[in-house]
Length: 285
Image (cartoon, rainbow, N blue to C red; front, side):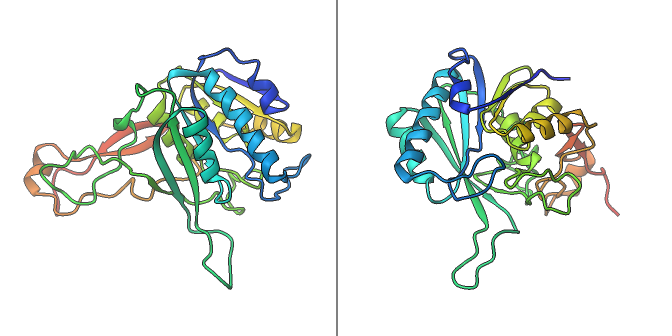
């Protein structure tokens, strides 16, 4: 069982109490300021007020992040470019990736195109940072001799389904994130035993993923009702992540028989929350 700390209260106040350069990874899913009801507070601030709030918690996040650390920030379309500017220009952090989380279900529109993605900014504190590519590879689509057949870099467009309201893993939270999506960040940017912080933990997805993947975690949440529900979620037995990358089980096309006969092909899967490998059969009918 991993070490999980939970703090109930304002994120900014709690962040100020954390030791400088003590956190290996931050995964933040702050309110998007789009008017969602989070129980004891509404997600509505003035434009300038929201930017000041964002800059304040990001400043503290940079302070507590270790030199090798990474921060991932979820954000909606209205403020994503402003957060990029804060992290890049005002915080002086190092941009790595602008990740698109693509999903198949979302808000429907009759005029204009329905939104089917969220954005995730990935910044590092320095140019020397952790990145465990081998832990997040996905099976190749095609066999090519020059390809790494242990899997490909997943790229910056991630296809994970929402945790639908009919899903038994769904918590009573308006913006619950898929476990496998968060697991990719945790696996890529931290090692077992590292400390991961989620300053707006909501339904507790980051804490649950860290518990399964053997990372220490600190979570901060303003709404005490969500804290109670997250504790119950953490007490449940783990039976597998609530989502998977649809590419996880594919076998590379055009794979030569001799390749199968000699070694088989490794494919990444999640078993008991850890990245493991399986081999396809060494012969085909």
